[in-house]
Amino acid sequence: MNIIDDLKVRYPGAIAWSFGDTPELADELAERVANGIKTATCCSLASLKHEGDSPAIGGYSIILNSKGEPVCVVRVILLRVIRYCDVDQIFARKEGEGDLSLRYWRQGHKDFFQREGSFDEAMELVSEEFELVEVL
Image 1 (cartoon, helix red, strand yellow):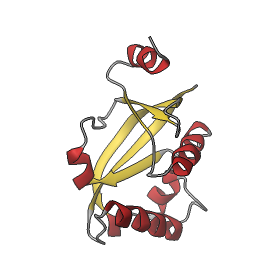
Image 2 (cartoon, helix red, strand yellow; image 1 turned 180 degrees about the vertical axis):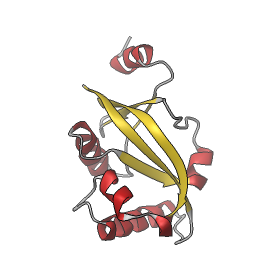
Image 3 (tube, one colour; image 1 turned 60 degrees about the vertical axis):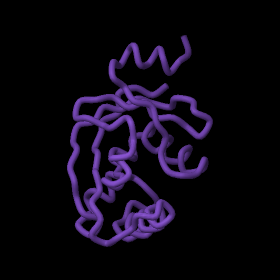
Image 4 (cartoon, one colour; image 1 turned 90 degrees about the vertical axis):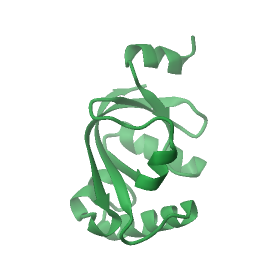
């Protein structure tokens, strides 16, 4: 049994995934979660509909680095749908990216969603807040 399978036994129903769309982003954001800086994330509602595994309140996620190695385990404590244009400074800070500002969040996520091919100011996002359960 590999470490991810072992973690899925310890955390039933856990899903394993990495952040972002580049190896550098996956590593940086996983580290920010492990250090308690990043306590939230989001994705486009459209992309979530195409994924096999979806987050659930109370569910566990095994956060992977760019090599597919587990970095930490988090537990989802809040899910909500929000439009990109309605994200506020509080949520931007919880996302824990860059200088933690709403300005940084907006530009970084606009760039990401444009690369994904789904950006629109009014697009719906699934915002997820989580608590750190274990650093591996």
